[in-house]
Structures are given as C-alpha cells and as structure tokens.
Image 1 (cartoon, rainbow, N blue to C red):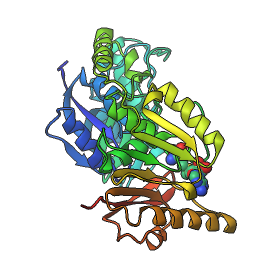
Image 2: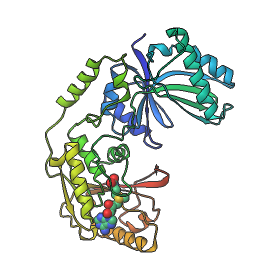
Image 3: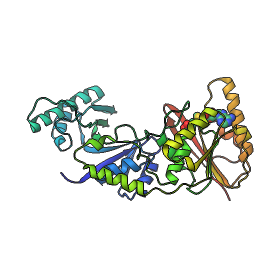
Length: 376
Ligand SMILES: C[S@@+](CC[C@H](N)C(=O)[O-])C[C@H]1O[C@@H](n2cnc3c(N)ncnc32)[C@H](O)[C@@H]1O
C-alpha cells in the first residue's frame, strides 16, 4: 500500500473556505474545495493530525475511490474491484451510509446494499471465508452519489468532530462546537484581543475561542474511529497527541468574557470551560444584556441571541437588539458579529449596514451571520 492517501475534511455548508484556511494554516497545499468539504493529498499520519486539530470541520474521511456509475452492476463491479482488504481486517465492522443526489442510481438504500454486497464479495475472496463476525474496528463506508459520480470513503472520525467531550450538558439551542469555531475564525478576532459573548448560553463560542488562543487541539479529549485501525500504528496516534499537548500555550487571563441572563447558563458555561481546560481564560458572569456596560474602545463581540417563537419572546428579543444598538452604536472600535435567524436584526443595529451577511443552516433553521467590522 502506498502511504499517499486522499482525505476529505467535510464542512458545514458555508464553512468550506474556513476549513480550507485551517488546512493551509496546518501546512497543507493543493487543497480542493467543493460544496461540503475540502479534499487534500495526505499521508496516513495526517489522519490523527487532522482529527485532532481541525476546529471547524465536521469529519475527516478517507477517500477510497471515485468513479462514474449509472447502473447497479457498474456500482457493484467497480466497488468489488477496490482493495478493501488493505483497510478492513477480517473482523472489521463496515456499516454503509449512502446518499444520492441528481443521479440515475436514485435509491440510496439500494446503493447501500449493493456496496455492502460488493465489499463482502471482495473480502470473501481475499480472506477465504464466508463469515464476517464484524466484531472488530469500525470502518463506516460512506457512499455519495452526485450527478452519477460515486465517491466511496471511510470515516476516520467516528463521532462527529463537534463532539469534543467538554460539553457535559447544554442550554436550549446550543451551537455545535465546530460551527462556533467557524464563527470565531470568520470574525476579525485574534488571540490577545478582547472578546465577549453577552448571551453565551453554554459558552461554546468563547470556549472555542479560548482553545484557539491557547493553541489547544480541540480533539485532544476524545477518541476517533481510526484509532482502532491496525493500519495506523498506535505510536502515530501517541506522537500526534504528544505533539499537540506540547504545543499548548499558557492561559490568556482577562481577555475573554461571557454573560447570560440565566444563572444556570453561567454555571453551565463555567463547568464546560473547566472540562475544556480553559476555565482560567474566560470570565463568566450573570448579566442581562440591557445592563451591559462597555468602557473599552476596542474589542470583538460574537453572539447568538435567542430566536423568538412567541409574541412575548419577540418583544424581549427586540429589547436585546435595542440594547446592543445603544451600547455599540458609537463604539466603532468594536467588531460586532451576530448569528441570528431574524432578518430584522440589521434594522435595529443602526451603526451601519453589515460589512458581510453570510448564510448558514443551524440545524434546519436558516440563519444569518451579520458582521460589522471595527472601523478606525
Ligand atoms: C441561543 S442561546 C445561545 C447559545 C450559545 N451560543 C451556545 O452555544 O450555547 C441564547 C442565550 O441568550 C440568553 N439571553 C436571552 N435574553 C438575554 C438577555 N436579555 N441578556 C442576556 N442573555 C440573554 C439565553 O439565556 C440563552 O442562553
């Protein structure tokens, strides 16, 4: 087997270029961005590295093959021709997940069972057995069919990369950690600058910022599917973890602050920050955004105000917007970044039009990330 492999860092719609920037920052070149991810040439040792270090990506997939297929026979034969035994051991578990978009092979379920059959046939011939107990390491095979092109990948991450392991519990509507990291990376904030989230909920945005400031690899506290793969020596994982631990920087006291009107949210944020190892980097306090008092001329605000459903909630949210406008209207040295489903936010925040308005989905809800840059 060659040591040169192709990896795909999958990304939430709208965060692909943030993932590309992250990969470039980690030293990777020849990055191919597509809707939903970034593809790159890599070595086996990059599987631990990317899983440990990527902040805004959803998963790291190993690309096994890409080919055109318009019939189930073509799908079967081309899948069976691939050297699955190089990855999957005789006791490996290999569940299949399939999706199909705009293709003649329309039924994802049929693609799933054809690929399963083809891989089983291949492994039968190689291992000279008819029986696969599937009790060993897990190799989730993802089958993606788009415009009649089939991409077969193995999921190296296991649980999605947002599962960092620091969030014990969450308030209502928490952001995914990977999304929160993406919002921080899309902002003008640089470690060493003041950062606040006045509606911090479970603290996700600030914890992700603190991890970034401390150069803490976000995956250090969890494990990954490919850790059980015999093909990647345990020492490679150990070394990647040791290198990551050695790269951590000391705490940056007093520059990151979070507030929330709910005491439970403040306690939760503190507990989460503690678990993430950044409790010393963030100050949390109970405060209503209407009582927020800013005496500094420069800083960055990143926040995700509540979305309203009922009338009384709308009124409360309008009050939140009015307060933000009052506090920051003349603070030109502050960059303000608001993630909200509410398209009315720019009508309330009158400092200027947003410098950028990006669109995302938070779960199934379409949301906007309104960004107002700091101006001299
Ligand atoms: C959508 S949640 C934020 C979720 C957060 N980004 C996270 O990932 O956990 C909105 C938060 O705003 C808080 N909130 C609502 N009204 C507020 C107010 N007037 N002042 C401060 N916080 C408020 C709520 O308690 C809730 O925790």
